[in-house]
Length: 182
Image: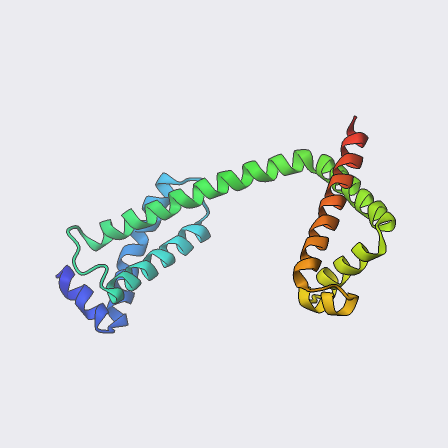
């Protein structure tokens, strides 16, 4: 019987898939609500929908040709794994959100320090660095185009010069930020 149902779906009988959905959904919802008391009904429904989509895709691609258990057991097993992953992701997100909320002021202060340092350094930077970085990052010019515009030998020379400019800026920013922290 299970094989016939899978075969019907593979042949495009979506009514059979709908029947399976309607048969198994109440069992899955009860299972999920009993096991995962902190997960909302809406999430449980979404996960079941994703599970049905996975079943369909597995049948259509040939990844699932026969089941050695009941369809309800198969779907509950897949859905359970998805709910476990959802719960794990939620816990990680909550932990990350809490960490960033606790440290938001520190991050904001640090970003402001870096912004001030970069702005200060940009005002003190030599004209060739300003021109190269402006053309490359803001005007999206290629290294060869910059070489042509600024009279450098070729794009490789501009690349070396750009690298020196960035290294200089980075070192100066780090120096200013680190001195500020001491």
